[in-house]
Length: 451
Ligand code: SF4
Ligand code: SF4
Ligand code: SF4
Image 1 (cartoon, rainbow, N blue to C red):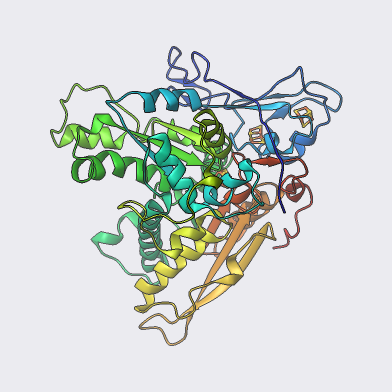
Image 2: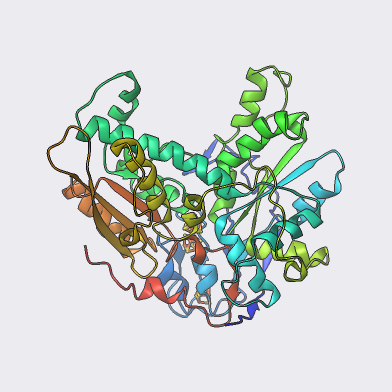
């Protein structure tokens, strides 16, 4: 089916968008963190209240018939209200002009870091069928703009090695009762293990469910791992340049990624460069990811440059940073992160590859909550250990039910994947918006929240 996309209104980051001239904290927002990424244009708001129904954090203020507005302290920046609004009254902060300026500066090496879900969406903005896979055309169009390319699928493989290993250590410590120096960290991070790659879920957890913070994976998201790697490893061995010349642009299906990139702790490439003497100790700090474009933003950038990715060749030779496994590819759909981590955990804990790599029961596209039991034939145990997992997407009533269950019955699950958007990133707040979309219906009528 060919989709006609809607033009979503955007605005450039206003002065003070990072709280740069204010105190270190305003409520739960730290200096440096973007605020007001999603805002309601009250002159266009009809007060229909659809946005409130899909908001996972009750961040929208206003009754039926009244002009609505967003409380930045509660907002997760997920963009679900933007996708749902039938009057196109919700707007998104955009960095397209900033990226154009980066590309125009010959001193910069500008790296585009596109997420798995982008390649099944960008072509829709140029009239292709909904869900058309256009990986090589996307990469070709990015190169035509002047970017170097670094596929997020590649850094997703690194994320899953980190996260899978972390989960294995927790199982060894909490389930198998093993002890040792390499398991000390696990003692402070109890099961169930929660995924950490969805920034809206992380914001939700920090703001409303702080008791769950010790359960969160400490692995950074693929985007953040990629930003740090591009400015350290790639700067040194691939681009062979001063790391300060490398600018990294996340290309995401997600508006919450704009917030994630601005978190003040994500300056580790700079810390590394200073610690290893690659740049002077008094060099100005820089973020691992300089800014984020949504799929809609990227389409706008392509249009400004006169590039239509659907007209480019459908095949292209893969570059050094475009190499990845099938495990990385499934990150974009609900259940994908869980499935990827379980494949790694199975290999380490059981000592052999999972024979049937597709763990279908955890795929959650059609359900808000999915749970499954995976028998692990662990060495040293008489019978298989039942690993219990849960996948939640469309963080709304479903997530609250799962968290309440964790609090009252902490042994029910060992591993929980949370994705804020219905179906996962494929329905993220940065994706193309269609005249008649289905994404907004799902959180209103979740197919299954029975647990
Ligand atoms: S969905 Fe749009 S028009 Fe309706 S209340 Fe929300 S912002 Fe206003
Ligand atoms: S961006 Fe997400 S969290 Fe913020 S108001 Fe909209 S739906 Fe709610
Ligand atoms: S589910 Fe994906 S698109 Fe939605 S907020 Fe999380 S990371 Fe972003």
